[in-house]
Amino acid sequence: MTKSAITTTSVAPLRVARVTGRARSTSHEEIGPLTRQLFDRLMEPIMRQQVAMAGPPVATYELTTDGGLTVTACCPVGADTADVDGLELGELPGLERVAALRHSGSMAGVGATYEALQRWVAEQGLTTDGTAREVYLVSHPEPEERWQTEVQLPIS
Image (spheres, rainbow, N blue to C red):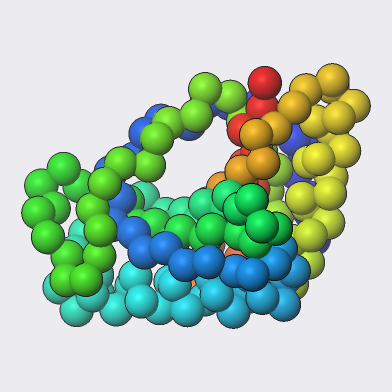
């Protein structure tokens, strides 16, 4: 369920710990389980090593040339984080301008949020680069009906 208005903003770069996987398609039935698996792989060493999170978790999505999707689960970490077992440390690049819309509730309904954003982008005469980000403002371990996710599409 989407309740907020679409906004445009810039996004600052983030230092993150991350893991990446690939979905064969863009279907929610494949992306949802993969994203959950990636976040499980990401959060286990972060929790075990008691790494301080420097912001809410983020997922990035990028279309592949064969119709699949590269999914990256990210956890913002401080500049002083030197090593997290089994995770890549790096920078999630900033974005000059995104269209953003908050999704409330279960991720099973996030497709409507993406559709609303894509429709708005087209109505404004803008374009996207085929990537997306989800910022999990409220998520696990909270009940799904309380989740708050900001969906971001880079625009130009």
